[in-house]
Image 1 (cartoon, rainbow, N blue to C red):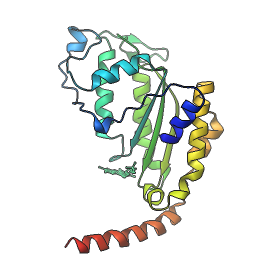
Image 2: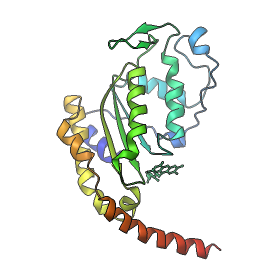
Image 3: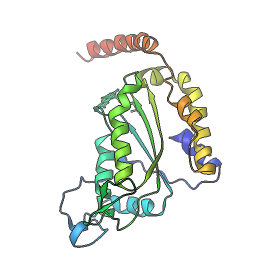
Image 4: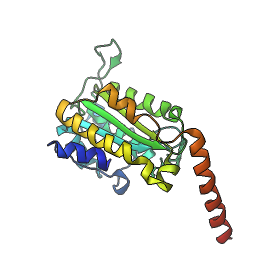
Length: 219
Ligand SMILES: Cc1cc2nc3c(=O)[nH]c(=O)nc-3n(C[C@H](O)[C@H](O)[C@H](O)COP(=O)(O)O)c2cc1C
């Protein structure tokens, strides 16, 4: 996220970070107040209030999440659920013919996903990407790219393996700021895993030995 946002701000975009793990955000309680009492407004008063303001004025939403049991973190899912208050209770068809809600206010027009995961294969991200794309469509927004970098154990223990991706992420931020999108080439490069599965298994074996040692020490 830092590399991507350095690229964005370096190219003149105004970047607002929101580290949701540090905020107090309750899950949606399905009171449906936003749907029939106060259109567009969630009655739950917590740190979502600031996020709503930022979302209403942003052009691009970059969602960053590790893969947690095959999809986004619960913290990020809570934020996305709470954004349901942008939807009105009525129904209409979108440009593809899918039934959707019209909107009380609009989420950012463009969504980007950035993720990492402990397993080394790109397949790990399939359910997350499916959810992310479905969410973008449900909010009437467009996914301009998913950036998924697997093999977090290798990246944490041998961070130099991430260097090329960090440079590309900075380049991607610049591209989003300057062109409002990402080229197929940069997405292809970013979505090429930094380590092969066999390299990953070898690196993880060292990590396993370290884990076993720690476990022995703590009795
Ligand atoms: C609750 C939990 C569930 C996880 N589930 C998965 C998973 O289903 N697949 C996977 O590849 N990694 C999984 N992981 C590993 C995380 O994706 C990994 O720790 C993360 O990508 C590391 O990134 P970070 O250094 O930014 O935390 C899980 C980790 C936690 C804590």
